[in-house]
Every structure is written in structure tokens, then in C-alpha cells.
Length: 110
Image (cartoon, rainbow, N blue to C red; front, side, top):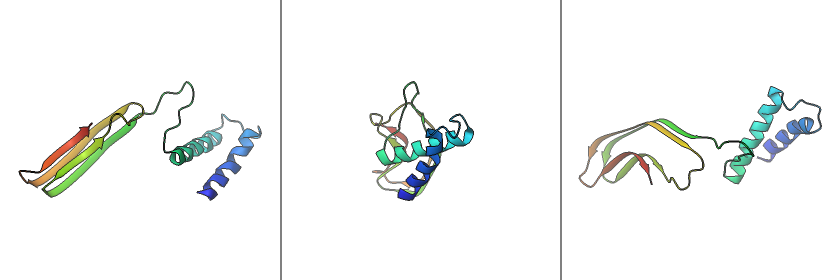
């Protein structure tokens, strides 16, 4: 990670120093990559003033099980912990043999 940070710093410095136009596509890509890395480090999305929070998009999930004796969920999300709007679609759970104590849920939003 230290190498990645150094590489991004080296790429951002010409933007900061005015040598590269901040509106240039390459500059925007470098800043976006730096933002992604910082979001991983702080384990939270970064939202700038005036910017809407990005939508959490969950789609096209297939869960296939042969036998269920406990609980199976395609998606489990704690709504209180989600930051910003969420889009959850096309979740498919295929259960073969479900015991009487088994439970199969496509989407669980608690």
C-alpha cells in the first residue's frame, strides 16, 4: 500500500503545482483513484461538500445450495449502517432440500 500511496502522491503533485490542468481526464482519474484508496483506508465513503452520497448498488447475485439445515440469505444488510441510498435487485436463491428448521431468504434488510 505504501508503494501505491507514493505513486499516487507523485501523480497528484503536478496537479497541485499547477503543471497539469485539474480538469484533464488523467488528473480526474488520478484524484478518483486516490479517493478510492483513502476510502479503503478509512473504511468509509468520502463525500465532498455539495456532492450526493453514492448509491450502494447490489445486483445479480445467485446463491445455489443443495441442502439447507440452518439459514441461507442472498443478501443481508443492516439498514442503519448503510450510508446513502441503496439499490438491491436481481437476487436469486435456489435451495434444493430445505429441512423443516431451515430458512431461505432472498434479501434480509434489518
